[in-house]
Length: 127
Figure (spheres, rainbow, N blue to C red):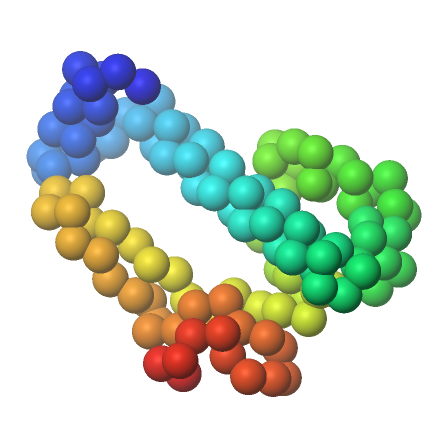
C-alpha cells in the first residue's frame, strides 16, 4: 500500500465517520494474513522441536492431511474455529493479543498474556 493510500485509511479510521467496506476488508485481510503467518511459524517450530508434521496435526484434530495442507497453504481457508483447532492440536492456545491504536500508535495487551502452552507453562513471563 502506498503512502497516500495509507494516509487516506488512517484519516478515515481517526474520523468518526462510518468505515467503508473497502477499509474493513483491508484490515480483515491483514488480520487473516497475520494469523496465517503465526500458524506457519507454529508449524515450523513444532516440526523442528517435536518432529510434528501436517499428518500429525490431522490425526490430533481428526482431519484428513489434505485438509491441513489447504489450511496451511492459504489464509483464505481459515476460520476462528480452524485456527483454534490447529493451535490446540499443537498443544497451544491464544490467550491474548497485542493491539495497536491506529490513531496514536500506542500498543496494548488484551489481556496481558500471549500465546501459551496449553496446560503448561506460559511463554510470556507475565502470566
